[in-house]
Image 1 (tube, rainbow over the protein chains, first blue to last red):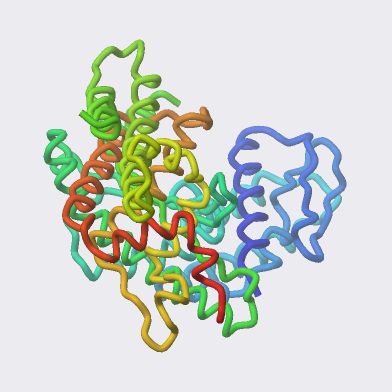
Image 2 (tube, rainbow over the protein chains, first blue to last red):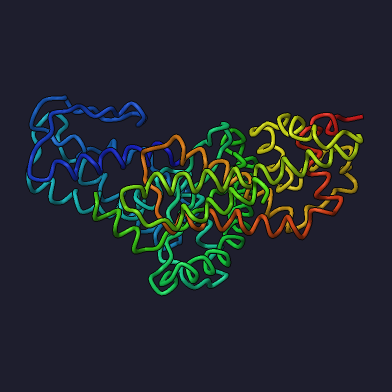
Length: 233
Length: 172
């Protein structure tokens, strides 16, 4: 299986749940990506994210790249979310108690998937694997990594990795560049190794079409620059 | 001073420019200039190689330089970084290895071409000053690596591959 559908439905539901805090939703949700989705009637006053369809495509084996503790917790949260939402009649208005019970579960699922740092399902898998491998190098100065996958302007597949260096490592431009020079070749090498191994694993699993030889595009910012961006938005 | 060195110097100055009203334009041009600095370093080296190989008048080198294609150079660079040299110069039973300095140059070429495309055409996200400075630094490190390796067979073969990769990669 592939975690893509689960990831997409959780993301949609998460955004709906966030935007519906304190109110109800009128706009329809397209559950077409979720197989066997339970459709709520698209009428006003229904919390469309409060549905077992959100997690119907979850298979714990799809998340074998997560640390054991995160994987177990994710499975537990999905089971609880399913159990809570299955009790909600599909065509009736949801109660505050139901929403209050389900929302924290969905929020914690979203926290494990961390949409801000891993912007798509492939970025989540490769990003987690890269971070795990990179940890062996015990590099100083990395405050945060962000990942997204896409195709570049020539149509070749890539993974964009943004490295945020901590304050201590980016006090001056020279210090920033010195640290980036040390980290770039190691991260590049680790990313290529992980991408290669992941591709071979996907081919062995009969998922050759997903085994893309992604080029790692690495960029560096200081964590202070991230705060500026967050402040601006 | 050569065009490629002038472009690298321009990229450096633009990345360090402090006028806030011009910041985004300067940073985007810095990234673009850093790419073109490396592009012109490699195409001028390749033009010189072909001119000397065929005893062509040096005055015609710029014409040779116009034969190189950004996309094909990127494709070749990706392959060389991955150790995928053309079959005729890297048989399967005795594969050619890519030296670290050449890998630094070829990686920077691919990275900077994509960054340049983002800088020139993608307005969805702003560049940051340190981020642009680091990309210029990647070009600078590629220049240093090229200086160390430019007189080797590996470097000359890399340049030749910009025009000959497909022909050299045909199975005999």
